[in-house]
Length: 264
Image (tube, rainbow, N blue to C red):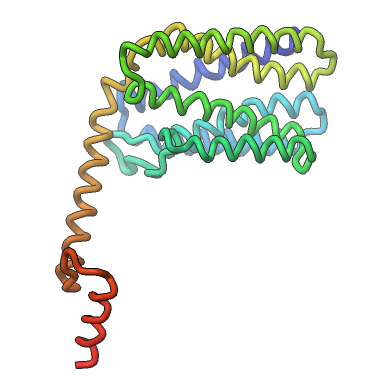
């Protein structure tokens, strides 16, 4: 059981360090800090994932896999779509996998991971890496959307229900960790315990009311997205005018008119 608890402490330790590193991007923006941080996290992830794949000792491989799963989320789940106010590159990708519609891909990921775990197509330590990544992704789907999706008066009730469910899950995982004898099993259960405890802590603290960060920083992001869509719509209208495409006319009629025009 000690191994499982150490994994939990390691996970929270990594989380604390990563929060400190994200402050210059979110709270006190530093121009071009994202260039340095994104490159650093890519290098960290690739190193950890490579070690998880190649290290001989199985228990050590699971440790590398734990941190690789956390780093993978920060690279493609956080930094890739995070928009900053100043610098050479304001955003690396506008594909935000934290939108609520991403649930389908998370569900597909869990199903495929379960199949790969059972069939052992991938090494179990690599499956553990993706379990941590998918677990954080599942958590973030609610974390990033509850402020705009859950009515204020229902937030405490929903959060308490989620917290109660994961308290039961935490107790169950602790019981399994106490009985588990192998280091690898305890490491996997430690990863599950890390995810369950994270949800319990947020359920009885942060999720009781709208997210402060959402209220302070999400407005400029939404305004930027609206502006980008308006520019795309304006360009689309320009193309329609240049090509002579009229409103309320079917595509077939437009194509027929174009063919007649080409023949003339």
